[in-house]
Length: 113
Image (tube, rainbow, N blue to C red; front, side, top):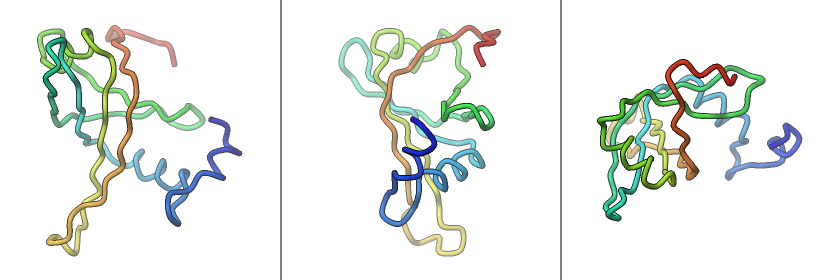
């Protein structure tokens, strides 16, 4: 997505640029996968995002023996949720940013960026 298109994209009164900057400050999200048997699986993960000017990509470290990895190998369609809790009003439900996309399993020594 071009920067010009990003500037035009807004959610309510919040711009994509603002949301992206907040996502770059976080490191925890919830990854949703679906196994080959059609069963859903969600798990909390730590994520990383490459610095600007790279596009917004989420990187999650995992191992081949984990259910999320097995699921992504069977079905690369994933969902990803990043919660933004209220630090002062803890009784108020957290805001969330939600994504849907396609996962790609990369080797640990991948240098594509």
